[in-house]
Image 1: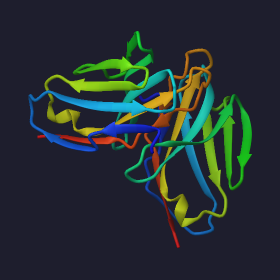
Image 2: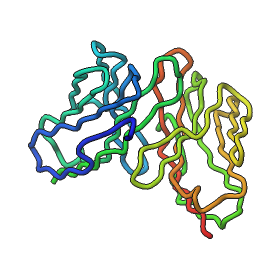
Image 3: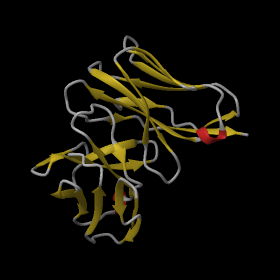
Image 4: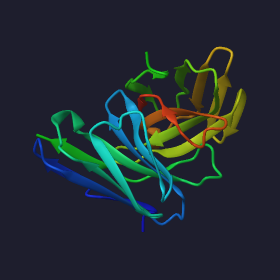
Length: 113
Length: 112
């Protein structure tokens, strides 16, 4: 089984709808991240969490919210989806002892029409 | 201006060629430099990392950092079709946890 899983893998939704993307990990890492990827822009950090009680905004948090339900689970919500939130979303994890290695899930392709 | 710049490509080379992938950056405080490889429809995976300046070699891959020029490179020798992927450079500060700043990625195609 994959160490970092994301559900759903693909989602099409309409403008104004609320949507939740879920991430689970079995690596035992304390740190979790949500990124979005757009062509030519690389990965941009949305939110990150260094432990269950710690949530921090990243570079592009507007329009998004997160919940860290447990050490292994970190979900991303779009309260009212808009078309420019169409992107590939990745969850990642890392160990607090590592300064550089993050482990990524397979991604969720979200389309907002 | 983005903090980390990377040519998006695509870069197309014949099998066996030496490939050079590059990134420039503007924040001189970056200390850790990484290359992630991303295959189509997959998440990125760490390929190599380097701390501060210098070279690091791992098989067919060499990572090079020139902090004075704010320039990093990844060289791939004897490139293979299986190297076809998007390569993302990433950087982090030395004491800010593991917050990574990514380049936009370069798409590489190695043709048999």
